[in-house]
Length: 209
Image (tube, helix red, strand yellow):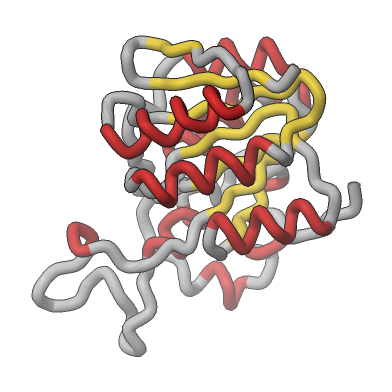
């Protein structure tokens, strides 16, 4: 695999870049502390982890912590675009040119951490990055999907990222109870004769033979 893209540590070496970051850490996410992350990292001992949907990095931080002993590199795919709940009437979620600040916050949350040298932020759509990963022959032992919850998009994420699994690798995701995610995972697993494992009624897991 040849895929040389900057880590957070690379991006913030220049003090001018650091000056653009928020002052405070604001690490948030949903279900990011679940033990499923620990268990799957132990099962796969990954060299490469792909995360689709990172937001402010809570799940990224958990994955980085539990994979530290394996030296795993984590490639985080997210467009980091504006969401309504991140803005207010004064536009505080965007800069003066209207660019969302959520990406800057994600970067800030890892400044000064050992994980910064293993996390590669990739600001793009999941499908665009899936094509790039495939073209560069990137394969991962562990892939976490927490992107759009609508059926069509969720199905495409599961389908295209499953192709990037190394032999014996695991792809898993959040939001199993949501109709779009549930239908997408069930469809893909049925088409490929794969069993679906679930954890706490919230996470789904598929393993590549």
